[in-house]
Image 1 (tube, helix red, strand yellow):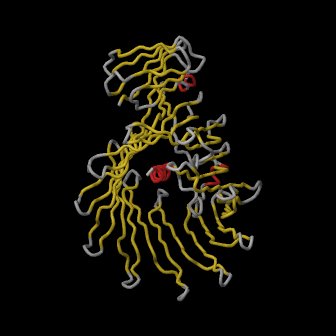
Image 2: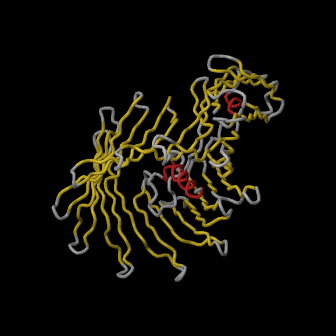
Length: 480
């Protein structure tokens, strides 16, 4: 169950870098222009507005309760335990929740380093070995450059029940200086020899705007010790927008490249895509045949309202509905609800499949919920949920860097909270207040690390007020 759970969490957090699909043509822009940020950056961020700093303290993951339609079962959490002076998360813990003992068990320890521009430089994730009661070898290791481009990713799978690694993959991104291409090379870990073995290569050629024009995929043959062609992807652009893509597969029998798929894109006057048309190559007739089309619809504000996909019926020579997504917005457009439906050709009606609800408060996502439709009972069933908890730090007479370096965790908390304070602060007093301003507890923080018992206070939202020799910092936390 833990292995499955970890896979589900990883799927939500990661971007699927090990899928044998061409990388986004924007990857080079990470290297040269930093147009879109980190290719992998699932961990907590920092937001500042005037004298208020928002930092994400933790996230909690739930699965739907199969015995209770409206219920959720707590499964895991990720908690930031240490930040640097800029507020970046340098250490986080990922824990599983044990239903039997109603306690948390260690799973993964995550540490990160950062460049001076606050871009992440390295990330190391280590699994917990319950037999030795120690953190084991590398589970995930990432290296980025100063522009946020991913240079190396090592990813292994850990069996938490039997405490051993089951497989591993490595991807190396090699940017060739003063050239028009870069290489992505993949390796697989041989569990018998503990050596990395070549498996896959993807070479990206790009234009002067740093957009992919050609991607060539090859697989390594350990039998013949050579690279074997797999596929090629061609892209064309108009005013910086992709208008066509062509996929060709390698025919190893004829030793030639053959057409496989052709995609065309159309845009509105605002530059948003309105139509994607996919066609497949028919080798018998040597012609392109319709396969799928995607129609995008926008509201007056330019936000996507719906997406309808259709499939080509070659016998009747017409387009038929396949699926659609309907996006509704609440709370001044901050909250989004996406409804996924599929077309029933027999009833000629749309049928519910799933819906996701993202709650956003003041520009910060606080909750993600997914439900699936039960055709038998004709109602929604809980599937998965993430809760994101943030600290709102009010700063008075103290610099932002020092305020960021005061860490309170976990948030939410059960029995205790831990506090880390920088050595530059002294005479530190922690006062806990209710939302109504009632003083609940006062504690002198005599060291840089303190643990405070809060088991005697009721569940709810509280203010943690830090009085220091440099000023006052106020944070919020939740007592479960």
